[in-house]
Length: 384
Image (cartoon, rainbow, N blue to C red):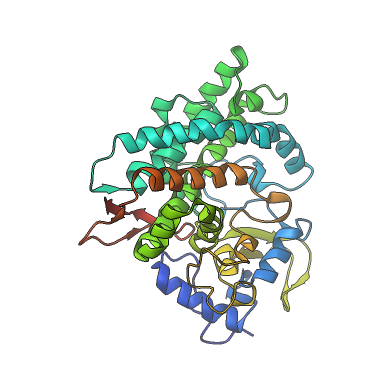
């Protein structure tokens, strides 16, 4: 039985970051799994979140990111929205693009992109809109295989879609344009293969143009938003307590700890969805076939049992930080996790190298993302 205090919690309502996190403290303290509505549950604690993510046979990934079927055709089985064996085949197809060697080779040109963006900045500037998002858009555009000059528009259309999740999106104008773009790219790669992820998808005997379009866009958006918001939220924490920024500028050995704590504390993706297969016990709560579980990644990343009584604080020296679930867990651990780590580290290091005087612009606040699924600063005004 869910207590009256917990029942009003609505994870789909866009909520101010601090207000949401105060609510999550309450939910974790009362319920490992909270009832949100009939047939809809919220996994709040780190242990319970990991249990749901580790068992795809009991908690299916089919339909992840969409709460209810909408009008129009349903998306195909994407790597983030499928179970084995389909998921295993898709992951094997895409893995060559995310090997350690491929990511290591990317590091120098990621730094070149960061430096080029910094060259074009003038104080004051918005570090999310003018630096973090353009950086992640250019990096993933290159890996997916779209021209750099198209990255900004593809990013804009993608953000239009992610802003409405978990609502259905396949009938939106933004998706129509994205599907046309990536379908055309698939046809072009079949005729003229190159060394990119669209070619891997398009030359697979398994996939139609429409399926390639969905997969290519999924890769693009997965590499875009969450990493950019993590860069922004990490910088926000460093600059709000500027001693932390000064320490990083003086000692790059702190960079890994800053990055992992930024991933944990920023927790750019608040939750993912799973569908219950069969009847199970999840954290002491009975869940039944066909019901949905909202797997609270943000809540798990703030769990005091794992991260200590100061879990709500940003602590770059936190020894348990790397236990975060910001990249998921189990078979759906993000393929691009190491790419994201390199982008975050590079973005921070480039700023520390070139703008050690960086500080929040006086008289400006932080504008947060308005989304039930994502969190982070949509705008971060700085000067130097």
